[in-house]
Image (cartoon, rainbow, N blue to C red; front, side, top):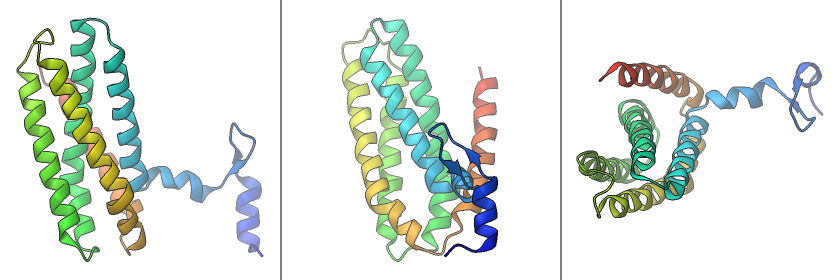
Length: 178
């Protein structure tokens, strides 16, 4: 039976588009580190989908530049904040180490693509391989790493706040960098 406080919270919660009420707890999960990183994953997946539908070299370049920026910010906040924080709570360092190695492989490939022209015959192939690398990495994080973090005592909300603040800083820097 819900407590009086829980019933009051549910009663005062705002309805969602589906008509269900969103409690403060479910809204706050959007600030949770794991939920935030998963949202990043979905955003990059969507961009890769747009890339695959792009018709000309300029559109491909524009979309790749967005993919590149999103992945750079995402990998940096994971490496600076999420991975070190989670390492303290996980029994298996290998899962973190593998994620770092996968990031480096993706960054190396991204650097190659950045130096290419979208009309280069290998450009699409390299973007496709990058997409496949990211898909593999995302699957491992979401199926293995993140569930372990969820089971741990890590304060994912506090880490989420740190990720959000750092993400905003990095995005601002990238927008002002020529």
